[in-house]
Image (cartoon, rainbow, N blue to C red; front, side):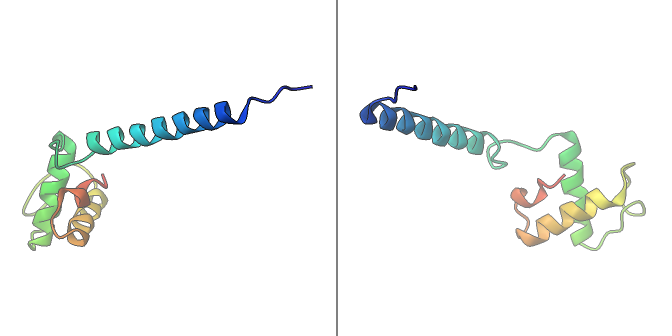
Length: 92
């Protein structure tokens, strides 16, 4: 037969788990926020070429990169949806 924890201990444990989860999500949200960090080399070039696509440039003719075109158009679409915000360029 299993012994159950007293209700005050169960609620205290549950409260600590929920609090720890929320703090973890908050920290992850802050660390992954593109307004606090710059994109890396690949992400930066994908954002740049995506922004050029929105300005009417054609990949591989006006700007060169050796990746396939899909990643550039995904970033261009994200930038279009977010009105040029760095949040939109995090698709790649």
